[in-house]
Structure formats: structure tokens, C-alpha cells
Length: 468
Image (tube, rainbow, N blue to C red):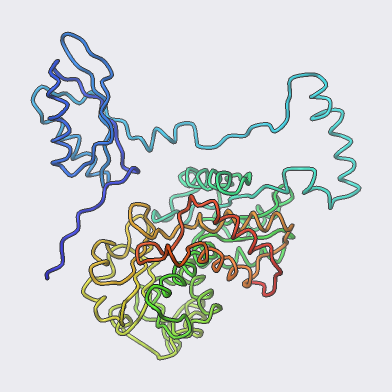
């Protein structure tokens, strides 16, 4: 049977509301809905905003697969006789108006008495006590429940080096997720520099006000040095989510995917596409978990330790992987492999390569927003498929890890993150999925499962062993 061509799924991230002016004929409602459906969109709401003897005003909300598709839906409706598209609102942009987070007071400030305790003169007593007993700062200030989400805007999502201002909506979103899933107060810190020394110095200078540092969307290989130097300088945990958060969730999902296909971590062959921050961290955690055969590929092909032309970071990665000295392209690396993990670029994995893999292949296509292969296409060949998207099953999403990780670190008043803690966190996420729930389309729990951050926090707060 020939593979079926996949149609891109519609998604709420490309949801629009069209305000339409029509002649006073109720049949327009059905005509509009039919036109949107015929153009591949999905109507989610139709509201009559105004009704007069000479016209109807309709608000039609629908979802599309991308920005071009959104415009195609507008064009399809605008072509209808008796219908005028008056205005189009992008619901994602509307959600971001004025930002997504705010600061609110936890105490009442209604009377002079309130002010005298929360601020002057009463606050002076607390400050004096903290000067004498600095160890009480996390207990008597927000430091005990606060995280700085730090970026330089150099590697934002799949958008590349777009700068600190353009990165701010992403950091706001991260702060909102911290609050929603772990009740942690987080602040976006977008730095107007991409100099390693300046970033390290800036974070070092703001660190006294925070209980942890979450590095975000900083390009490799600078992110490795920045994290390492900050961990040496600071007495609070430093966690690069693009590395370690991704690695935790990938290991958790792979653990359960292997339960589905009845294979063992110690015996599978894994191909990782992408040798940047995420790919390197995934490889490191897989090796720590017991995987023995990992081949890493980047744009030039398989990383082999005998290649003297590799840059230092790739040379180190090659020295710890590819024990069979596989060379050539990604296609070559996939032959007889059990697992593909992509954290690289869209469209680089061809569906016809998957049958050359081993029995019941596993494909994790995690490039965002567009994966290495359309999950619908991959599912025609692979036993288990995961992606980074919310509109397909098995979403590999860092929000499964970082809220619980920092909740555990803050609760334990930890000063560092360890490799052992990351392994425990991955195991905790995997075990949230019970044997009864486990199947090829459900290898990872929902991000809205309240058991996840609690399980991760408990795992992180356990005894620590190996520093990462």
C-alpha cells in the first residue's frame, strides 16, 4: 500500500477571528463554514455580533495549519458573494497584548498599619536581621521561591538569533509555566549582550535575588561555557533547560517507548540528529542511563572520533559515542538503528529510510515548530512516534521537567544540579504512565497531569551524587 500524503494539522496557535459584514441572510453562516472547511480550516466558533435589517455582523473563529493557510482561509471567505471581511484578528497576538505575566502583592496594603510592617519602618528590622543572618534570606524573602529565566536571544525556539527583545514573549511564557505548574515566581531576564563574559557577569550580579537560574535559548557552544562558569561561581542551582530539561523528557519518553517495543536501553542503537545544546545533553544523559551505542549526526554527517576536522565540542562528543565508527550520512546511520532522536532541522528525515531501521523502530522528531518528519508520515513506518508539537500524540515538552526540577531544588535549598538527580527525574516522569495506560500513542504523561511536577520535585530533592 502506497503511503498516504499527510495534510498539515490545524492548530490553535494559528487561530484567527474574522469579523464579517454580510447581507441579512442567515444562509451566509452555512456558506462561510463550508468555504472554510473546503479550504482546509476548522471552524471553532461563529457568533452573531450584530443584527440589523440591512446587514449581519459575524465573528467567525477558525484554526489553520500555518500563517499562509490562515490567509488562504481569509481569501476563501472574502471571495463569497454578499460577504465582506471587515477585520481579521490573530488570537495568538491578542493573547500577548500587554504581556502574559504580572507582579501582584501577597500581603494586604490597605492601611497605615499594613505599610508600617510591609515597608518602612518595619521592613528595616527584617533587613537588619538578614544582614546579621544571611542564611535566612531564602526564608524571609522571595529568593526562596524565585527563578531568573535568562536569555541573550541567540537561539530562540526554531527562530535562531532574533535578539533579547524578540525573545521576551518566550521568556514570559516560561515564567507563566513556572507559576502554573510549580507555583514558582519566575522573571524574564533578557540581556542585551551575546558576549560570554558579560552574560556570566550579569547573571552573577543579579543572583542574590534568586533561588535558581534557568538559562534559556542561548546558542551552542557558548551555552556550555556559560553554564559551567556560573555553576562554579554561584551558590544556587544553574539549569540550562534547552539541554537538561530536554534530555530529561526525552529519556523518560524513550524509557516508555522501549517498554512498548520490549527492548532495553543497554542494547538499543540510537541515532541522534543534532549536535548542539539539546543533542549533546540528550547524548550525555542517555550514556549515563546505560545506552552504549549512540551515533550523533549533524549537517556534515556522522560524528566520528577519527575526524580531526571536528570543532572541540563535536570532537568531545564523538570521542564518547559511535563505537562502531559508522560514517556517512544520516541515512547511513539509520540502518539497523532502533531509535531516531531529532533535535535539528525540519524535513531532514525521509519516510522511506525508516523501514531500514531495526524491528519496531522509534522516531522522536523534536525540531520545533516543524519536525524532522511529519509525524503522520513517520507513523506509517515506525512503531512509536513522538514530536515536540501539541497537535500530535506523544508531545515531548520540557514543561514536564523544569517546573518540578526547580520546585525540588528550591524546596531542598539545593546549590547545584546533579546527573543522578536528572536520571531520577526522568524515571519519575516515565513512571507516571502506568502499565494500563501505556501504548504507542501514550508514552509520556500529559503536561496537565498534576502528578508530574510533584513526582519530579520529589525525585530532584533526593540525595545528590554526581555533579553535571
